[in-house]
Length: 396
Ligand code: FAD
Ligand code: UDP
Image (cartoon, rainbow, N blue to C red):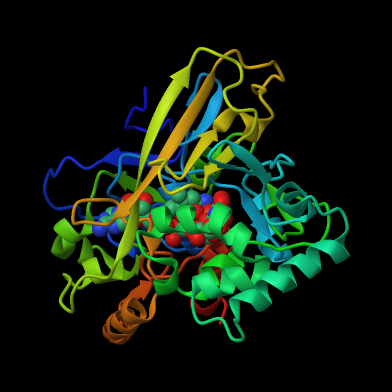
C-alpha cells in the first residue's frame, strides 16, 4: 500500500542508478527534498540558478510528505498541520497550493477519560468541574503554590506552574516521558511552552492567525516548489560525496549536521518515531484527526485518523467510505533510524555548537533546516529560515 516512488507532477525526477559520473554542472546542489530544501531550490531557480536536488528517500517532501490512499492524504511521517502568524510565510505557501480551513483540536485520552487539548476552559471544566476563568485561575494558582515553584527549572516545574499538578499528572507526564524517553525533570521547559494555556473556551491547538492543510497534499505542494530543479531520488549524498561535491559551486545541506561531519565529535541525540499505518473498512474510527494517549502504559503516543484533516471528504466532496489510521511509537534514535526530533537539552546543545563551529568553516556549504540546524522548527519556521537564507544569498 505505501509504495516507495512518489507520484510526480512534472518535476524532473530520476532514480540514481549509479551509472557513473554526471557531467552537467550546477550552481547549487541541494541535499534533501524536504520543505527547507524545496524552498531553497525554488528561490534559487527563480534567481536563474541551475539546481540539482538529491534526496536519499524514494519520495520528495521530507517528513511533511503525504501519500494518497483510498482518497485520503496520508501523512506518512506524522500529522502535519500548517500554522503560522507570519503573513509572508502564509502568502508564500499559497503560491504552491490551496489550503483548507482545518483547525487542530486534539483529544487526550487518559485511561479512558477524555479531555480537550490544548489546555483551555474545556480542559479545566472536564478536570475540575470549574465553569469560569476566575475559578480555573484560582485552582491553578492553588496547585502552583502547593508545589512551591517560583522559577521553573525544567519541563515538570514549568508544566505545574502553567496548569497545576492534576493536569501535569494526567495529560503531560506520561505522554512526555513516552515522547522523549526522559524524565520530565530532565527536559527543557521550552518544550511544554509550545502548547497554549487559555482561560477561554477555545480549543484551537495553535495560537496562529493562519492555519490549514493543502487540499491536494504536501507532496504535490513540494513537487510544485521543485518544478524548476532536477531532482534525483534514492541518492544519499554522504555516500557519494566526492561525486556530487564536484557537480556544484555551492551546497545546501538539510540532513543531520553530525552525520555531515561523520560524527567526528560524537552523535547528537534525536528521537525517532515508528509509524504503524492501517487501512480500516469503516467510516469513522475515533471521530477526530488526533487522539493523544497520555498515560504511560499505552505504548503509542497518539493515533492519527487522516480523513478528518480533509473533513472526511474526497476531492469531489463525497464521503469517504474507508479510513486510515496511524499509531506513533517514539524511540531513541539509533544509527540506521530516521532522526525526527532533536533533543535540545543543554548537553546536546553544547555538542551542536561545536558542530556549528565546524559548519561555519565550510565555505561552500549552507546548513539549513530542522536536522542541519538541530532546531525544533515547525514548518512555518523552516520556511521562514530558508527564505531568510535565500534573501542573503540572492537578494543581498
Ligand atoms: P525534513 O523534512 O526532515 O527533510 C530533510 C530531508 O533531507 C529528508 O527528506 C531526508 O531524507 C533528506 N536527507 C537527509 N540526509 C540526506 C542525505 N545524506 N542525502 C540525501 N538526502 C538526505 N510542523 C508543523 O508546522 N506542523 C505540524 O503539525 C508538524 N508535525 C510534525 C510531526 C512530526 C512527527 C515531525 C517529526 C515533525 C512535525 N513538524 C510539524 C515539523 C516539520 O516536519 C518540519 O518543520 C519540516 O519537515 C522541516 O523540513 P526540513 O526540510 O528542514 O526537514
Ligand atoms: N504534550 C503533552 N501532552 C499532550 C501533547 C503534548 O505532554 O497531550 C507535550 C509533550 O512534551 C510534547 C510537547 O507537549 O513533546 C509539545 O507538543 P506538540 O504537540 O507541539 O508536539 P509535536 O507536534 O512536535 O509532536
